[in-house]
Length: 92
Image (cartoon, rainbow, N blue to C red; front, side, top):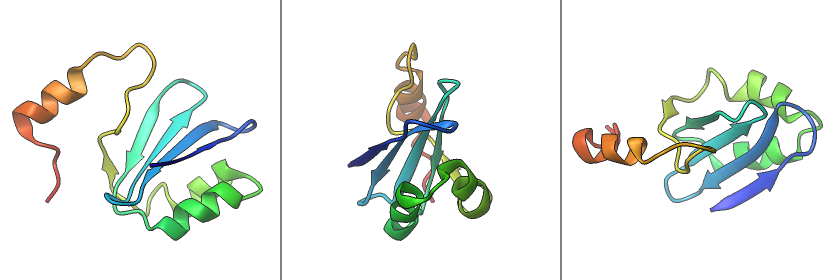
């Protein structure tokens, strides 16, 4: 998994798993939003963008389906894993 940390803007960290093509964005309000089927080139461009939040708004937010985050956010429990165990991960 590739990780990029940002020091300014609303996005604090981006995690990308090339094998599943999933992008997890960690926000300054402690939420994590996951996107599925994201090409590696999109992750690369996000990491090199002068303003990652603007790049997200223009190129990611409405282009890719949302998914379940790979990692837990601060203070979360195992609810996501329990949900996946019961219902699967929602991949079609």
